[in-house]
Length: 392
View 1 (cartoon, rainbow, N blue to C red):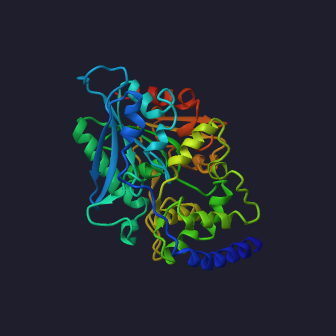
View 2 (cartoon, one colour):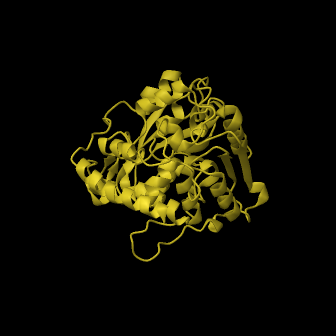
View 3 (cartoon, rainbow, N blue to C red):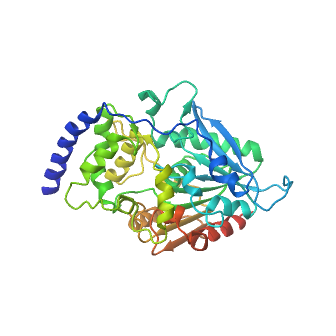
């Protein structure tokens, strides 16, 4: 009862607090900036193509293609296995590229003979265009990760499949694993898919240990933001910054290091990488998307967005084809992809063909280590590369 009283008072206070912040919307980064090819890839000696894919619902997504390794001369005539790399929530494709070429996943895969395609989710700096909607208007932000399952991944897979003529390997981190798993349950993508590597997998969020995240979910912050006219969730915008400060006042919330408080105690991300991260990240998403994630945390069920009517349909993980090659890696210190939640996911995959499911547990890894860890090549990426090479 004490917890309910505390959350109730926080929620009521937030209603008034958010209303005071509504006029102070901040502008995001200029989407006309040079793309990731120029800023983060070609400067290291790799070829890179800036591409765009339009979804069925009109969102224009930015892709970067690294077609070959740094030391290859000319255009390779050998058909390479394509790999789509999908980031998590509140970041974009740049997050994969913060470390050196010898330490970041896209360039490691390219140097190992793969054709690499980096995705930038709708709403992020390089994917803010739409055929008719303006990101400064609420209608642009009326989406959640259901729409990424229904529209974004199919559009990307169709495009890469047509360009390469091959089945596709997939790497997802965090939300990138969630939308993939949900897609697989509905039979989407599986005919175009060769294999999938899921890092820091998210399907269930009931046991997440980030106090800030749990408090935000239970206090219905996303719902409050939508109802008070803030459809864009911009971590760099004044409303969200002030909301986080407000939550940090709650008992038991330590915001001395917000990065660690949200992701867990990352063992292997150094300070210079975090500094580079903070120069460009975090990225915006829709507030509705954050609401959907909060619903997942509160309900303990992997389901479609709950509009407040009848119970929404679930994504049934047992529908994932049992012969689909999967590589799953999770960390013992991850505050978002908690060990108990991953065990719940694995329990739903217990009928998966044993020779098609590879599971890796890294005791000292937290959420950000999978993308920015200085030793991720030795701990994770070499295993991902080997896993892809075993698929014929």
